[in-house]
Every structure is written in structure tokens, then in C-alpha cells.
Image (tube, rainbow, N blue to C red; front, side, top):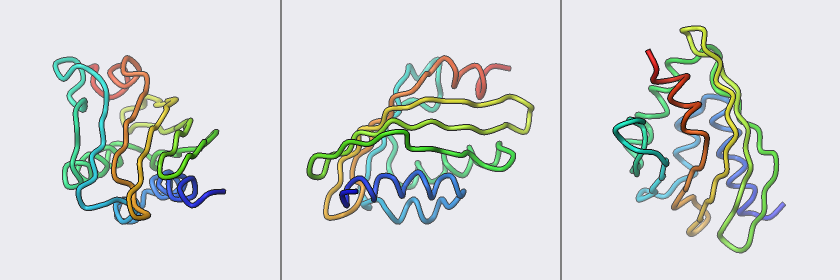
Length: 132
């Protein structure tokens, strides 16, 4: 496995272990994480810096029983760019089940994650996390 793929895969291993600090250590100080969606429909949509991202991860994990398990299904790397197909599974404290499929486009700089573009089923996010 290339170094780029290994670093990107390690990100999801650390998130699966609810190791937010470890996941953040893999990122540059000026990392940006892009989450798709319309802000009026999905409050989590937008661009996150490192501090805001840490708060999002902490808030998300606090609502889950046993954390969020993330499995890298496939990964392709070319230099400092990595494309990953990822699946996740987690159960919310309110009884809802979060089962998501993602594509992540990740760019590394100097061996750290510098940008993440996340693509996922925003309707499922809304139905599980937002809907009353």
C-alpha cells in the first residue's frame, strides 16, 4: 500500500476507534474538510477547518452508542491524491441506525491530510441525524 493510501486509511481506522485526537494528528493545521449539501436542509454542510471539524467529530460520537465503524472498501492513489470508497455503521442513542456509503477525495501535503472532499447520501444523514 502506498504511503498516501496508508495515511488516508489510518484516518478511518482512528475514527472507527473513536480516536478523534489521533485522527486530527494525521491532518495539517490548515486542513479543510468539505461536506456537501444545502445548509438550510443539512446544518453540517459546508467547509470545516481543524477546530470546527474536531467539534463536529466529538458531537457526532457523543450521539452514537459504541462509535462509528468505518471500513475502507477500496482506495486508489496517485502521488498525494487518494480516492476512497468507505462504508460506515453506527447506532444513535435515539435508536436510529446510521449506515452510510461515501466517496472521499483526499489530498496530502508533506505526509499529512490537507484537504478532504466528502461525498455521501445527504438524505440519509438528514433522516437519521436531523429529522425530529
